Amino acid sequence: MSKGEDILLENIQKTKDSRQSVSGLLYVVQRNVELQKKYLDKNWNLYLKEKKSCEELEAAKSQLDTKILSYQRRIQDLEQQVQKLKEIESMLDTKTHQPQSF
Image 1: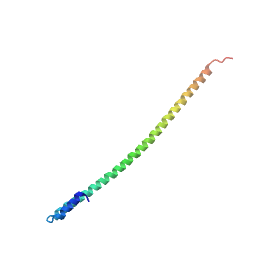
Image 2: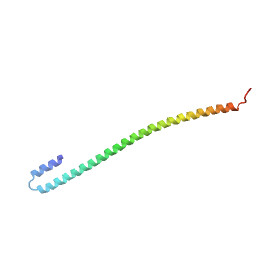
Image 3: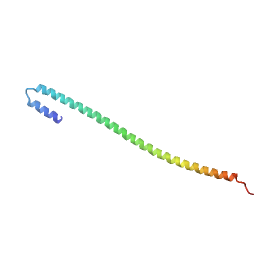
Image 4: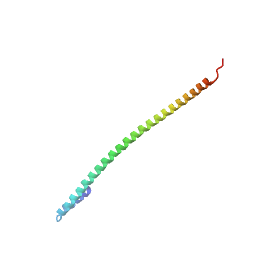
């Protein structure tokens, strides 16, 4: 029981004339406390689910960032290889187009 419920129950026990009306008030207070607890529990569970989802999204983002970095490095390597092949091709073209001396 909450402190407010304890105080209300204590007042009910002290009051002999209007026990029934104060008992109704106690019932309303207890019902409100129950509803508040349900509301808080529901919101807490929702918060935990959303927190877990955020953590999973962050982990997925981190993995994607790692893959992107890996792909960027691979692209750079391939671009360097293409450049080297172009240089080799240019050298071969230069050699084949030069007049040969005997």
